[in-house]
Image 1: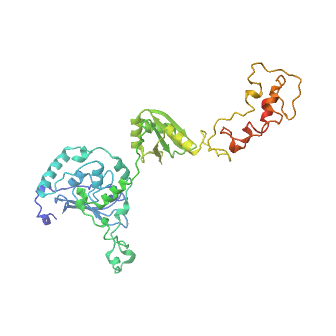
Image 2: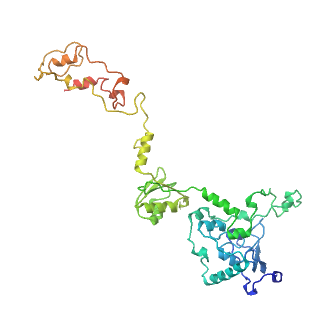
Image 3: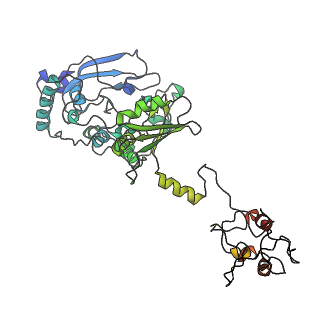
Length: 426
């Protein structure tokens, strides 16, 4: 097969000879026992145009045959699968990974510069231990929140399905169920996902799959810290009955010192209060949409300040115990202080007229007509003159009374025997 590659300008010593391909779990398939063919110097790499060893295999039943598309040097430079060109760590396109890690691709695209760059990268790969990527990817940060949210954690074997049968689309397929291709409606040719280029995917430009994932990342919810810097409490919801206080502390203590941990079993939630605002922000950033304890995905939000919760309770009419108080019919919303009635003034008990003489003590005098509740013995006749012979005045209607803290009619001092309780006491 090497004779068909005479146009290649590389020395034969630079051709790649490998024993096993670099593949992701999806391309390799779910069956651990697969048969794989190996063709030494079978094709040119679609990126660097060097001959390399081509591997071909079937990843499973009713799946299409797959083969390696790029050489292992190009695969190691980008840390991607040799077949699908997706990142081996996150399962994402190169453009999405480079955007999440803030990496700018500096790989040349001309033939001469590409050859020189590839030789230098091969030298760096040989000197490395093989555990970390090389080039700019090896110097990049270890992780990114966006990549963790978009990363595919399980294999996607649906990607290995056969292609669509072109004869079935035209209505001419005569194989029926024995046809190894799919009998499905093809995708819209105007769909951007139908037009993909392997070189654009490798260089991280004009990749429709990457554009779709980046748009999804821009619309994902975020947890912004509140403006009130005094808030250092996080709300953790969806605890269930199995998660304990120790497990919550073991997770959140790595971000900073914890002041208090409160678990509300009735609501299946917890409140984690940190000693510093910096620790709370770090915990919220690292735990939002990523916190899983005992197989349960927990909800992480910012807590609210005491002032904000008090305002909401006052606005909604909720008491401190959590019960909402219903308004009393016919009473105003605000309850001012109680009024001072005319009967409660000191002049009803003592004659506080212009005379400075003390009140006269008349012990045995009967009460005048019209007085149902006489004052206690010892008060002078001036008391009867101040009260009058017509009895106590009727209380004013509720709408004409001055505002006061009257919750119920029984608390009104003008009604329901209030005089007997006040004037008849000993």
